[in-house]
Length: 247
Image (cartoon, rainbow, N blue to C red; front, side, top):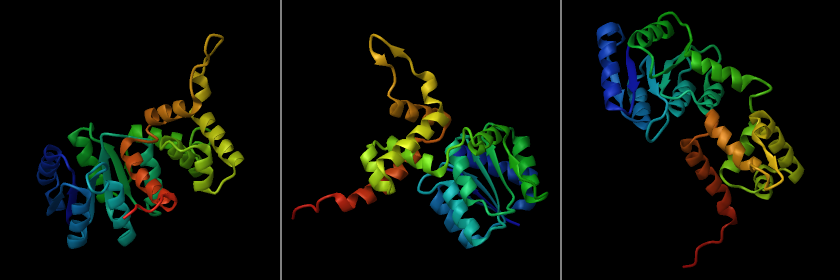
């Protein structure tokens, strides 16, 4: 039995290491990484049975580490832990968790006792342990009324990156009507129109596009890290339309 602990915060990393050594010494040795890339390297070197992964780490996220680990060994036990129950992370996890795989998702405000108990449940009892707040976010994301489809999520990313309807249509191989329909569905699910106020003095109060982005940030559907990653994909797509620099 061995464990890989990946956490970029030194105090958290040392604290959890102490917990494991005191309460679960049979889970050692414990290999420690301070970023995602180092975590993946240590996994491939030592092949630990259990991973405790911070989700938001430098160089590579915990979710990307897990994706590569599970692609190589689907039975590996993993607990994700984070300060955040953002819906963007819940959506990403749904795409990578192998069928029948046991895993956990805890928030860092949990007690030491809960963390130790969750590790035992996932590793020894083969039970998934998902924080109550995360379960609520997951339920909303899977609900047909409030959860976004992949197509609606794509158009959310596109407007958050600042693309026009015409650019979205070109990027996603859609007609203008197709873009409009996706935006309408997105606005409905984010309940954008609920905040709208019309005044004789200035007309409508909110830009639906900008308000949707604001509500998506508030709901945790998008965050700065995601948009930085998506900006790279966008730049790659746009590169074919940019003129080559002059010598």
